[in-house]
Image (cartoon, rainbow, N blue to C red; front, side):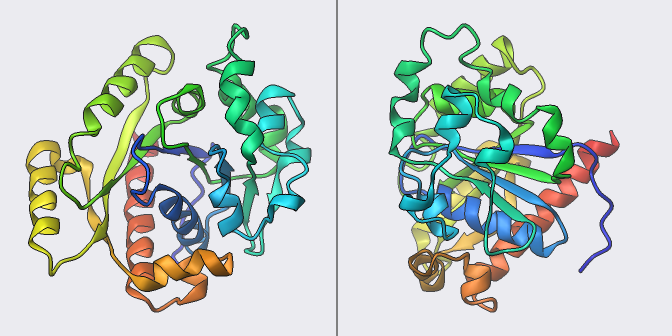
Length: 270
């Protein structure tokens, strides 16, 4: 394990893409596990009403008594909503389908876009000494995703290696710009990670070339391969790093975690 100094305040990263099926939740789960392997303490906030990140980390639906819905809508205490997973130093605030009504229920709240921001900055957070807080956003640009962007220091964008992959980014970038202007001027793009990448496929290579030509250094060096072990791991309620530590998918997420740690140490030093 590398000798890594703590970053001080936790770095909050929203993992977002309004397009579904791009590997967003898979990235949230496995990046969290890889950061823990690197000696970090990590909290994963499940902000998707589907609750797949919660399921993927072994929190069954009938055991989610207190969730992100309670945190946002009911102003629940952190100690009530944070759950320890089976992985040391990795905790989660789980989600249920109740969260799907949050947009409507919060519409009349004047601070509706800042609820997650304020919740993650309660004085009680200091007791946990998180290094990273990852937010798994829903596959839409709704109030929940805006809450995540207002709360976060940066946004990590999974990009599936397929035709039309870049087309959906324009609306996401517009939302990022609006959040910067209205609520979070320091919000930055953590990076864009290519997922489901098949190096034998000319299309994957073309998508990568297009992404690097258009987005330059925002695209991570690491590419997440299309890997059967990554697909199998959620059915065993564990990250691929625990399910098959030597798989190509596990190695890729470790590389991604190293890039993110390096990036954030540089940001912290500025």
